[in-house]
Image (cartoon, rainbow, N blue to C red; front, side):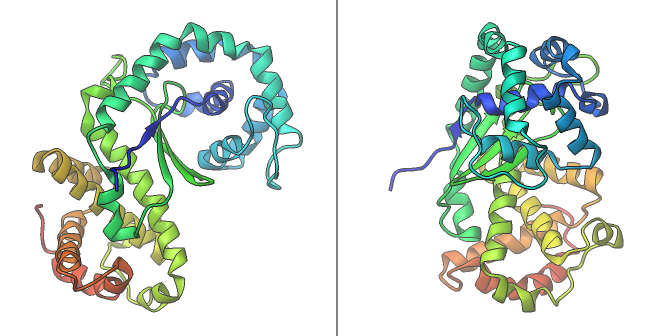
Amino acid sequence: MAERKVLVRIDDRVRLMSAVLSATTYPQQEQYRPHQVARFTAKRVADFSHHPAVTGAQVLLDQNAPLEALYTYILKLTWPDLAASQVPRWVPPRWNEHLKNFYEQTKLAEWWQETKTDWDKAQQEAELVLSTVDFYTFLKPFVGQVVEQLVFMPNLLYPVGRTVGVRVGGEIWVICPPRQAWGDSPPWPFTEDKGYVYANAMTEYARLLMLAYLRQHAADVAPVAQKPLPVSDEFRERYPNWGDQFTELVVSGLVALFLEESISKQEAKAYVLLQRKAKGLQIVPGVVSVLRRYLSDFNSNKYDSFIKYMPNFPAHLRVAKTITTI
């Protein structure tokens, strides 16, 4: 079977939603210097803050609607007519029509053409970085055969400080901004930090696939979820649901393991340190140790799937908790 690749796409629906986001109050929340395309796009749409497409988005943001919901919604619309087959109840009335009107009124098609060089460069960089890795084979022992097409979109617009991962139909999308630089420096090219691209892509792919895997095996997961995971009170407070705790731990471990295999141990250690500082996750090295143990057993045919191993995960992690280095 031929090695499957991540598809790198620039999608106008994603760009449209990001342009709408630029006209809301969302950019005020960002702590980073955006790409020049994001800055100029925000200026271009600044006079449209009262457009119904923007006010609809603002209402959703004020209600703490996740960005994932907004991007999932627009990726389910057809292009270029933005027709909707099914409309979730939370969507503002006629929002798809307002989004189409916003696109036309702001002349975004012309703007995308003017900024084509930037977008082409970002796409080429992302394709170059992602051409040498195989997410599908790496993830198979943990979530089974990945039937979905993995898609990566380099995003030069908002949000500039976070990656968005969504599942739409038979595709899993990662919408990723370039890595932020220090101070007022512009963001880094995607080719300047492979580890950043790999970590962001793997985090979202693994998270969405693992959540689906847990739902698929809900009957087998239920008794395992009765065994508490050896996590801190702070972590348990942030993720009160066992499934969320498990997914967060396993995904962090998978990212570290992938970085070690695809780049270097130093890259993996840098990621582990970042998880410790940003999320207070002290246990990632222990998770990596447990995942390595499972992989060894999987490769020797002791287990034929992760769900068969899962009852051992809490106990094995408790033992591995004392491990502090990869």
